Length: 356
Ligand SMILES: [Fe+2]
Ligand SMILES: [Fe+2]
Image (cartoon, rainbow, N blue to C red; front, side, top):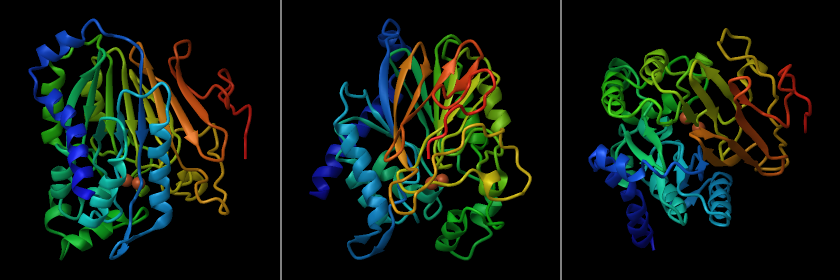
């Protein structure tokens, strides 16, 4: 069963690798005239957690199982699914194997993003065996997609500070831990990104898939990427850029220059907005739309997954929030920024409806 799932899964992820390895000119020629609307689904932050033997934390399993089942029932069907990172809790083989087994139930091709909970035990070695390269790009119907590993950090922290790999993983797994270290994309990937994009026409829409926000929101919780400005600079020449990230387990949206930012929900648990919790300094944009409140009596509350239509290179985030009103955040060409039209007055940016 496991082998069968794994074989099927590798077949589905192989598409991404094949697209990445084709000469880019060939790919672009093939898709040049196919700039047509399409949808993809996005599932993230399942944090599959091993207890012992065959036992895993049931609640985190259920979140992923339900998102996968709902994706498979979609009509029209999405072209592919993105998994946004933190598949595992502590990056162990049982967790990654079990997470892959649950994801292998998807009826679609899948593109996986590396999260810090997947990475810091063996620095992504086993994850790569299961899911392929940690960063790559592919083209789909006139849109250039880039997958980044945005959760690497400084070499000294990674290689010299901790007595064991397990300790390093535990330190990075904590949200509010002064022993942590800021995430970044790093010089190697920034160079790769520059090279990759040098061949992409500036009027071709670009969608970046990362785990951490490629912006600086709140350092204390690593809602942060230390070289965000340098990555944004590489993306600056393009007319239409969207960054879709996981990690924050909450709805966030922002516009910096030409780049539209969207966060996705976790299937495991919600985080509160930082300024509702701590009075530490942060650069979080003013939050105008409160997150749907978590109900402790409903295990899936304030968790969710996304179905994302893309048209003219712009993505619209349709959030599927289990027992809450679903929400939709779309780019408003009049104001030049993403807005939640059901919850927010487009002029005042004040919430016009709050559903608890
Ligand atoms: Fe997470
Ligand atoms: Fe994360």
